[in-house]
Length: 421
Image (cartoon, rainbow, N blue to C red; front, side):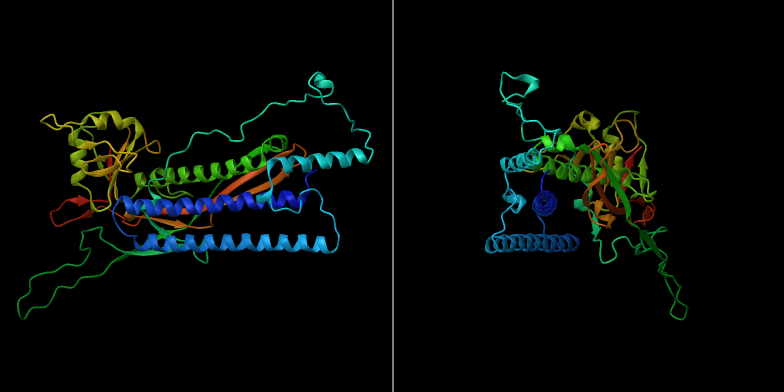
């Protein structure tokens, strides 16, 4: 068997590398978004950046402590003439695939040396076949191929509340109740010199966010793990879970019901619906109508299902002009735009012809409350079947802090969430 210290060090290094990479990619995404939009970090982004940087330094310090401890153990063995058992004393990051296989081979030799009658030595020749084994085995690419999930849209643009000292505690956010008008219950009136002033009240609401657990697990056979490249498999699983976590979050922030999960923008209490002119179609009049009902254009974006792209790309006004849609430039990092606002195509919204196949939203009015941080854990809970359980879990909640569409002085309603019906 592989020495337990080696397996423990390898697993810890894989998990730490995955988290460090996640932090790096998130900090890169924050920086790229600010550069793309030609602005400085918002206060929320500054706080998140500082928290990520501090966590990254802590991981680096922990890695340094582990390495120092391993060096001390090696020095102790050398002074006391204690032999190493294979490569178990080495740091996982210093081991290559060949050394891992050598350790497995050493364990097999030890079994044979004990005279186990169930263990037989056979010649391994290309001409021997199954009775002895083949000299040359199949070679496998040490990289697992997989389709990338979609990039996140909402989290980089929303207001994110960090986990804090009580990660899963209910978080309350007060807001000024503007359900009746943009001025809320505050009203000004003309007054004669000796008359009484009119009285107004200040009404406040409370948005409660409580991070709920989102989790899954997959099973990997021990034989698969043993015959594959350990480093490649571990890295793949860590990245696979992390990418799927981000894609799942984006779906919840867009379509979540609010029951034991975030309430998505499509189900926000403040949303305004625009009835489309023609079923299963998107026309100029639909897009123009949505534009007129948007609450705040600063930071607003379009979110569309991928199946709508052909319709949107050919939208034309009454004069036949279709320049309201402008393709993006991937090389220059310029997103596609609709009516001058960025548009993102995704499969995390309903398909063409359904409510929400096109949305005009301002994510800065959406609040994300993080709870327990992202964890990827390895359990060996099925020894009788030789299966390894990999568990991914995190806690999160989200909702729009604007409770209702707001009526302005022109008598019309406006909202940060406008949905094509």
